[in-house]
Image 1 (cartoon, rainbow, N blue to C red):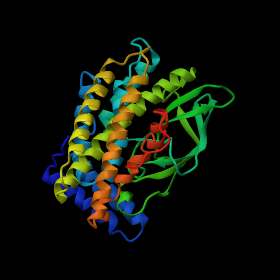
Image 2 (spheres, rainbow, N blue to C red):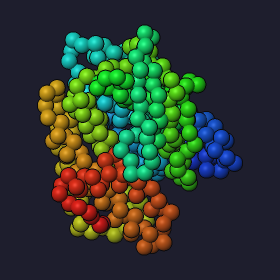
Image 3 (tube, helix red, strand yellow):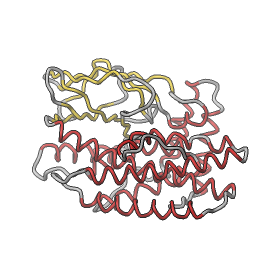
Image 4 (cartoon, rainbow, N blue to C red):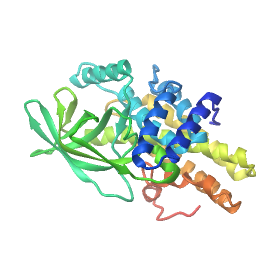
Amino acid sequence: MQAEVLSNDSLLVADLAERVLDAADERAARHAYRRSFNRLRSQLSLYPAGSRPSHVFESATATVRSLGATCLPLAIAVSMHLYPFCVLQCIPIPFLSVARLKRALLLRTIRNRSLLLANTGSERIHGTTTPLTATRASDGVYINGRCEYLSLSSIADIVLFKAELADSDQTVLCAADLRTSSVRIGQWKFSGAMQLSDTSSVTFVNHRVPNGHYLVVPDHAELGCISDYQRSWFHLFIAEMYLARVEHLRATHGLSESAEHGANLGEVARLRRQSLQLLDEYSIGVDVGPLTRTTATLKLRVSMMSQTAATALRNRGLAEEAGGLGYIKSQPTADARILRSFGVASFAT
């Protein structure tokens, strides 16, 4: 999983980072982000394809590995488009169903118009969320509420989210236009290099999602399976980009090899293979638990390796280089929650 970064990509990434971090204020920084990202995106593979989920994943991860090695915040941002796109493409849907038709139309629109997706964050240690609610109307559903975390907030075209349907126990899954007056994007959540994740809050004020752009999910068990399937993909992407960053930092700064590090790499490779096999085998009616647990274990292992690398860098006086490695602890399933599921109360690297 060692990253290989093309020189042209590296130059464009460095240019983006420099322009954003040198901007006089956030408005200027967002403008620089949009202009620089538009130059970079032609070099990135943003619409992966494949006959199996594992093939789609391998097609997508070359991009996040490359970005993750040199600019972790930007890799996180781009993954917030890639992983939901992969989920849309790969999640098993009955062949003769309205949902399958809606998915095909949405994917075709995204590809043909080269649109960027965004996905609202869910579990976070910090921050509050006003639950999204959807109210039915003859021309669609109207959304109100606030989510604290939305990456690619300056450049995404479509936002994916779920909302509780008012006066019912049903949920709607929405693909909504992000560039309208009824969607309000907040200030950037992070400072310093993490600005490059382009993460903000998003508030919906009577925002219409037209008919055909949402799907009602009446069964909470079915919704849970969809959420767990999506989370498994995010676990895989997060592990990929952070490991690329760790290996890049180890090579750049000459961190000593150890038997523990070699064993961790072997275990990560095993968990990755197992995760992709489970991804290919998953179908409607199959328990998603083994996939979620395996990908969560993979993410936890890479998180532990990231914290170990960060400590080694700080001990060398390289605190700035270690910056960003700690965010994996809360992405997307917090390490503490994974450990509790294993019956472990706490853990220190």
